[in-house]
Amino acid sequence: MKKRWIFLAILASLVIVWLWDKYPAIKSTAHSILDPSLGVLLNFNIFWGMAIILAVLSLLMTLIQKYTTNQKELKVMKEEQKKLQEEAKKYKNHPEKLMELNQKQFEFMGKMMKESMGSIVYTTIPIILLFRWFGDYFAQEAIKSYRFFGFLSWIWFYLIAFMIFSSIFRKVLNVA
Image 1 (cartoon, rainbow, N blue to C red):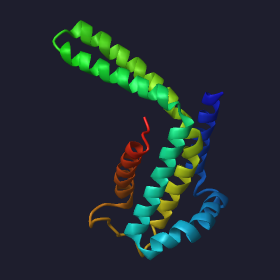
Image 2 (cartoon, rainbow, N blue to C red):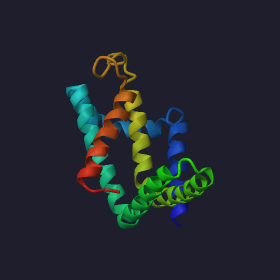
Image 3 (cartoon, one colour):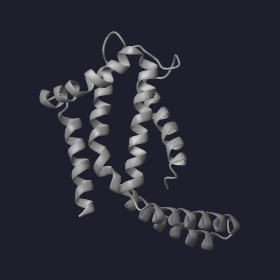
């Protein structure tokens, strides 16, 4: 059942991406919600507005991940993976043993991925809508040439700031 919802969320987000410019209702609905809220924040100050938006977004995503996944199981799997990595370091000169340990690690990675995919159902569509809206916002002629820190485009700033905020919130909130 979980797989079906994940598939539907991903499919819906792809449909949004493909139809964003083709069906004005999708784009205009997103703009009617985000322009008067997040747009005002960005219009006030692009740098701090974007930083605040990304901080809140990464906090929300971290909380969703924390409460939609089995954190105990994920932490146990991470510990097992660490042990396998340490053991692999000991056997770096023994290819056959190293291959066996790598195979065990891949099994854990699959299980971890499966467990952590649950939050995608809740976050994919809002993230896609927000990302498309950012694309439209930063395509405006008046701010098209704006660079964060003088050289980063909005996409790079988004990715870097989001990773930084997510790392901080994952550590503070003890998320696996």
